[in-house]
Image 1: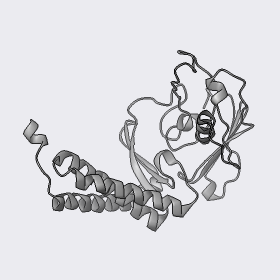
Image 2 (image 1 turned 180 degrees about the horizontal axis):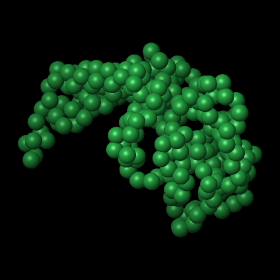
Image 3 (image 1 turned 90 degrees about the horizontal axis):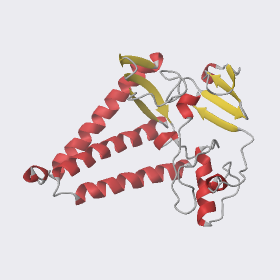
Image 4 (image 1 turned 180 degrees about the vertical axis):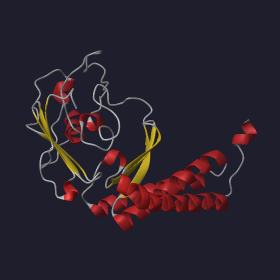
Length: 255
């Protein structure tokens, strides 16, 4: 077993793996654009495995960086780091093979961003009902602005500061993380941002709240959602020139 993991994968073979992954990446994405984009989602194994057409203009978890130069720079840096480890791990064929696959996928995504401005995804697995207690399934979960698609729990640990076993119903957004980290570390929070530090919530203190929360997602013909207090409005099919609020909810356990 030890000898199996210590086998070597020559660099030329690793490069062949990278080129193969890039080729498969671009061919399958072309087919996804041609066959899946009109249908959006096709069931393969019920709701467990679907082919769902999604265009992601951001990075991991759909996080967007408006500065395209910085976005491209960060993407290239990531590729360089992966390539560095690909070369360094010459004594471990399995790790080098794994990094070659990752690097091929990274190059494929770079090609997508340079040509189309966004990355195409289409594998959609549902291993468990992650949307509970909200409605799940296509149209209500990942990629959509219903609660099942955007709401996630958060677990924090801060010994001697956060009381063990404590909970809160405070609702925050991803853009609240930056001011929170700045607040905790004593770094000046950048100006002109939408985020609000939730450090007071962590310390069981009085917490400033958002007067509203806003989401938008370009896939599935364009979506927007706004939450104000216990009300939430959803607009869909924006790219088809629909500017009407299609859904208006009071409370969230009915989405």
